[in-house]
Image 1: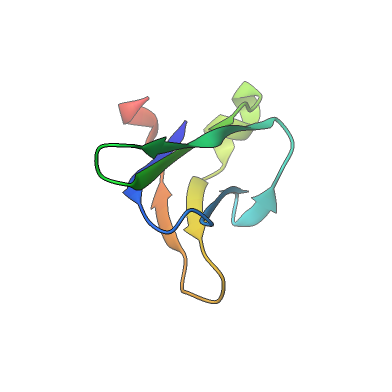
Image 2 (image 1 turned 90 degrees about the vertical axis):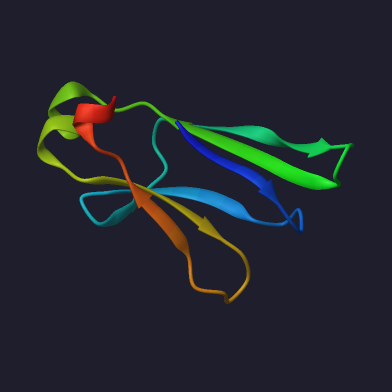
Length: 80
């Protein structure tokens, strides 16, 4: 799961890369959530992979907005 928390504005997008390539199979996006107390947003995306894909590839979540450079985080197997 990839979680982007307390961001602004609301049009950020979460995506996945597997082995360095964009990946959309097995992806479930949750609707963005507006925090009424501070006006910021949260988003989440879940990626389901087969075990062999998980074991032999790097898996990265990217948050993007327009032409800004992406913010990315590579998942570590020892933390899952």
